[in-house]
Image 1 (tube, helix red, strand yellow):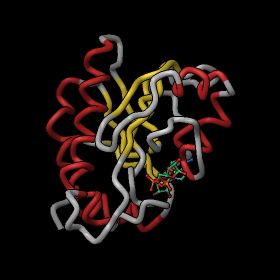
Image 2 (tube, rainbow, N blue to C red):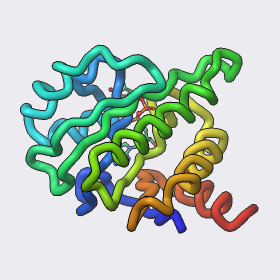
Image 3 (cartoon, helix red, strand yellow):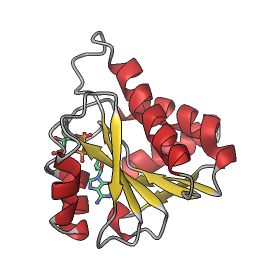
Image 4 (cartoon, helix red, strand yellow):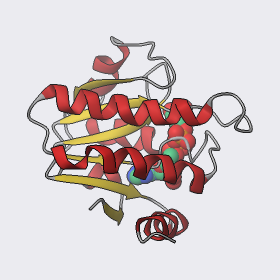
Length: 165
Ligand code: AR6
C-alpha cells in the first residue's frame, strides 16, 4: 500500500527522496528550492555535474545534509494542454526514478512529491493517477513507498484514487 502523507518532503527519514527538478538541476522554487536549502550547496554542485537532464528523465545524487541518503532529481513535463506527450513524459519521470532507486541497491524506502503539479501546471488528478499507477507497479520491491503531498487537495485526490473513487 502506498503511504499517502501530508508533509515537507525534506523532513522525511527515508533512504531517498525524489525532487521535482528542472533540466538545469541547479535548484529552483517549490519543492526543488526546499530540497536544495535543506541539503546544502553541495547538492547543486553534485547535481549540475549531471546536467542537463532531459524532461522525463532523472539523475541520482547524495542527500548531503538531508536525513535521506539520496536525492533523485526527476524532471517532469510542463503542462501544455495535454497534447504534447505530457502523460508519457510524467510516467517516464516516475519510472526512471524507480529504476535509479532499484539500481542503487541500498534504497528500501522512497518518497515522491506530486511532480509537475506546481509551477509546471499539470492537473493534479491526472498526475496523481499516473503517479499512483507507477508507484503500485514498483512498491513490492521496496519496504516503503511514500506519496508526500504538500496541500490538502492533493492528499484528498490521492486518497480517493487509492480507495478506488
Ligand atoms: N515538500 C513536498 N511537496 C512540496 C514541497 C515540499 N517541501 N514544496 C512544494 N511541494 P513544484 P513542478 C509540492 O512547483 O510543478 C521548480 O522551480 C507542491 O505543492 O515544486 O514539478 C523547479 O526548479 C506541488 O504539489 O514542482 C522546476 O523549475 C509539488 O510539490 C519547477 O519548479 C510540485 O510543485 C518544477 O515544477
